[in-house]
Length: 457
Image 1 (spheres, rainbow, N blue to C red):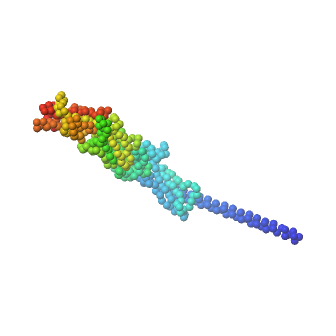
Image 2: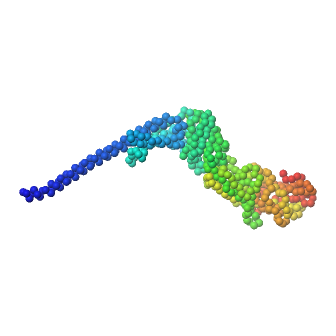
Image 3: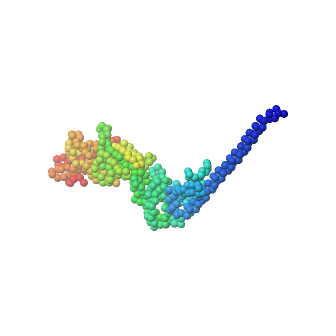
């Protein structure tokens, strides 16, 4: 019997250990369940508080004016709120929305917005409770348009991208100033009536090179009428202004088929997206021949799909059909670019004698003047940069480059102590083979035949 009881002692110990383990597992399971329940309750409580905060924030947004809501579209508001020991961050936003598309009005071509959508986003701060893997609490609402009127201004650049920070000023029945947000959009709450709108920002220009929209009436009239109970939209294009770093010129000598540096009075930048389509590089009326022309940063940088055409001259009639005599150029926004233009050859031969009795080409450099007679061009007579002949074969003005166009050439002559001149008929400097267009002038010989009293006009 003693031996039997001793054999069962080990079994009893095992049973005790198993029982203790089972009790431990039950206790751990119970506490884990209670902890999970408490954690879930904590998350639910945090989300419930966040939802209440979002609803409260929406009520506050709905009490704001359109002007205040417009500021929220420009810069969303962030604030920290403490609720029952937990810190939450509340973000307030507002966007004008088209009812048919549910998209913000600045992203649409429509001219009016149907309502204002408010958004309140709430989530705990780093110091607050966590929502676990769930998203922040978001509440949205709708605010009807104001009983007066509102104006939406959208500004984009040459790539149709939003331009933030553009200052928008309106004057009329009331005045207001704001700036475009990251979407290039600005919203102003106004009374009905006629307003002047001006959009500008330092270092920015519109497609017609204006720094302020009110000065450019060709693309967007400065004045606009805002009717009651309607949101009106205006669109503008502005980009960082660029500059011509260096525009140089070359002339072609047909005898050697080589180019060499030349000079010009002015040049044209042409783009079909401008109104008018051409711009002078130098100020109008410039009268100095220059080997290189540069500008300040005032050029609108159109995209590579719409480059500028550059050629020498003072008007659109100077545009040559040959690609060699014009060039394309794309300006980087806020940067500089250089270009080179080849000028057509214009040969002016001055003879000792008359048109019916030529003697020899002059071997000195007489006073020769050229005038471009094309419509819209500068008709001023100018004395071009001349090549002083060294022999009778040299003549005068041997292959000087001149813009493509129609010219009258004139030479001054002193005969018997009197000032006289000889003018050529209109001559087109547009020889497509670049062999040079020849303009003959005559000094009248010893008799002064064919000369007109007075100097060249």
